[in-house]
Amino acid sequence: MKRLIAIIAVLGIISQQSYSQIKFSTLAFAYDAKGQKIGVRIIEADISHGKGTMRIEDLKMQAFVRDSVRNATYGMTGYSLGLVSSSGKTVDAAVTRHNNGAYTVVVDFADGKVRYDIEKPQAPPVSLEAFAKTQSSRVTYDEDFTSTLHLTFKNVSEKVITSVEVIVNYNKGLDPYDWGYPTCTRVIQTRISPGQLGTIQVTTPKEIRGNKPGSYFINRIRYEDGSICDR
Image (cartoon, rainbow, N blue to C red; front, side, top):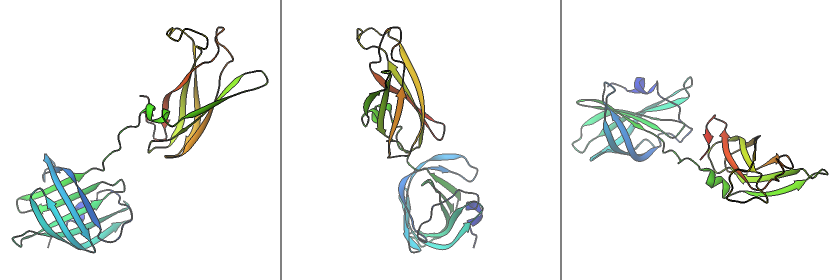
């Protein structure tokens, strides 16, 4: 019997899980044997201790694990499955779970192989407003009355923050509707892990063109992966 382990050997990494535990219910991009996209399909799997079920659209099949293999070079584990339809016909399949939560499923149907790529749902981008809702601040002064803003906020994203750009408006005592006031921009290097509180210190001139510091806001946040939150 043909094994599809060779197909999954080039796929990605999976996290450590108990043996033969494969579970998902989602939409997947489907591709034919030539790699041409043929649409989006509903696909579900509930397999544990070597047996369970898999459903692709309206086709529900009993599933059993024939074999598993771990490739230390690629850091992944793949499973060779047998899928049995209600008519008793068995087809080969292979499943890989990647370390980012994604799956790749290959099923060897009678009329050709079909690959299903299941991407891990991505969290929506975090806005600057979401950070602002968690922040608090205080101001201290040195002997020369130079002010330092101590800004504390929670990293509500799933990435490590490495720098924060803060803009201080020198609008104290000015008409709040006059947008011609001067500003001071500071980029503060930091490291704040996801879910953690972090405090940055922003020191700015005592005044600019006779205007004193008034309001402030976070303008941009840079993450460890190089991406930026700026809206």
